[in-house]
Amino acid sequence: MQFPKWQIKLRRLDNDRMVHSLKTAIALLFGLLISYLFKLPLQGRWVVITILVVMCAQSRVGAILQKSYMRILGTIMGASVASLTLWLVYPNVAFTILILCLATAVFSYIADSPSTLSEAGPLGAVTLIIILISQNPNFYTVISRFLEINLGIIIALLVSRFIWPLHSRTQLRYILIDTLQNLKNLAQKLEEFRITNDVNSEKPQDFFENKILNNIGIQKKLFKEVMSESFGRSNLNETFKSILDAEREILRCITLMRNALVNFSDQNILIFNQNAEIQKIYQITQTLFQRAIDSLNRIDKGQEVEILENFSDWNEVKFQLKSLEINPSEQFAIDLFMFSADRLIVQLHTLIILIKKV
Image (cartoon, rainbow, N blue to C red; front, side, top):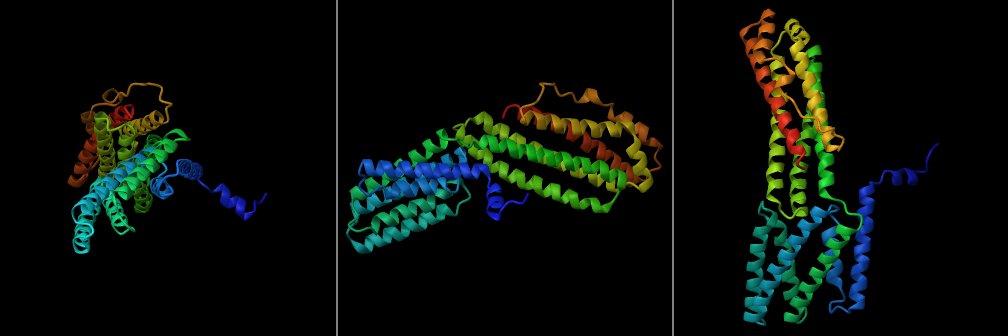
């Protein structure tokens, strides 16, 4: 059965985006109704504009909270400078223009900073300019704009929080699952590389590495949003940093293991592959990855993660591999592989413990 083109396009729409679009419309309706019922002095234009600015580009509760903080801070800064200008120099045109230019330069400097305060810079400049270049600027204009902006922020926050909320923590869990799945696939490619020793296997490795690094960047943003949702709980902040460190270290270990395997000859890599302890290492790695994913999917059975009891001593593995006729570079490769595999399993164990705290 073939669907019409409009139905196909409709089916492709993201559910979360549709929900957020509807929530934005509801918040806008509330803003217009309140402005009309209470006959706000500026006809509620800044209530509506603020709702759109805060909600349009952000769908998650944490992101909207962050945007709201910056919107309030920028409005306070712009309104404060405007009030001082009206009190001290207005209506002197020359001094008013001078303060306007200097303050705009400061706000521009803030906007270009790497900190989260950068979003407050443009909002402060816009607030200042709109107040000072309006017709007959006065303190009443400053207060009215400030109150309407805060009303818009409150409406946006209430709608975002209580009407079909989209939490950053949920999105973070999805991204963590996708990251772990890609790390698991990358580790699986290690075993396939051992079997085939095919240089073409670099292509899927690059694909997984790019996805992992991109996801880690997204996680940084989501961590900040979750912190906003939890109102800055310090224990979560440390947990999130440790999760990022563990993911980076896992990726580094897998890369080192692959670099080690590149140094084997075709014959020795086959013997290396047949070693029972090496097979056990790969099985343990895949099991730990799956256990971490299950924990994020809330289907973890509460099993304790055992590390050192699951495989023999590394010296025993090295003893079994003495049958290989190896050159010095291959001996170094074995040592590098063992060190990286040991580190990988320890980091996976650490990551599972950290995930349970999220």
